[in-house]
Image 1 (cartoon, one colour):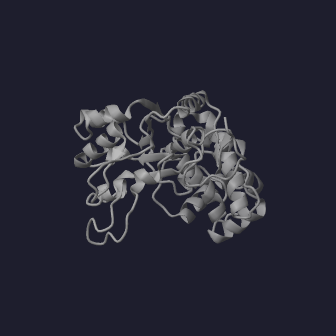
Image 2: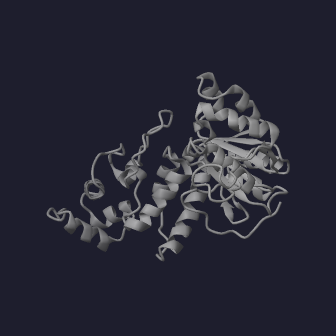
Image 3: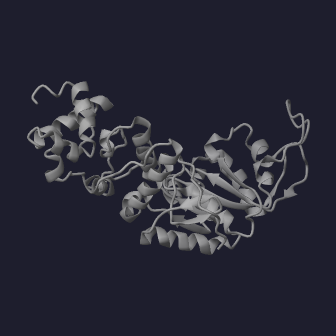
Length: 344
């Protein structure tokens, strides 16, 4: 395995296991994710098409990059293309390229994305969103491994590896008539299902710690501390946005400099996954604090959390500050801000 030094991942992408491939840190210790990495590492050595299926935010592009970095194509380009973002009218030109004068505005020859990735890997991201009438064009590419640039009469062979990614099961799309079965079978040589974060809670704390370090460095602030009670709540939270949502939660702690609180109190508005159990905070720490999503401003949520902590502690400011995991002086300042110091 070719490992590079660990560097910060792009926060929007999330990260997945404790190793580093190229410049991408991979964070995770759960058996589910370890199994995924085993399959990825095995298939990376071969040039077959790989289909990555998983919810948004699970790190499909990172895994595609890992496949590329561990392959014999690692010195070649890795090009991700967002299939829904490709113009339908210019699909062939953008994918296969064109020759000068092929149409109005074609001032020079272009390679297109497939030939630009020659010798490397092309990631067909969100391939399930490709319109039905364009799917035969992709099917021919995967069958023949050749393209015909717009304006050229003869095809050009390509040496490109294809990895496809989708946030919905393509087999279901085929059954619903939204995706061609022949294209599905061309893509489904090796299918790897990436489990959602709620299915691998063992990975939550390693990810939290990675992003706590990452954003402390990025924002040039002291590393935020998450108490054991809050960490337990975060392990139980459904994380419907997966690693991307967890990443945003941690960045929000630094960007707003608010006391660490459960995600629903920091503005997370994703619906709770129907199979996930509701979060119930520890009674000894948070009293009867309502953890259900609320429609209010961040300031209102913070004031409510402070008021509930004060009530639970019998208005003992030291105990309330300990419950909220903030300094006593910070609590007193916020109490004055929200007009909650009248009873003290």
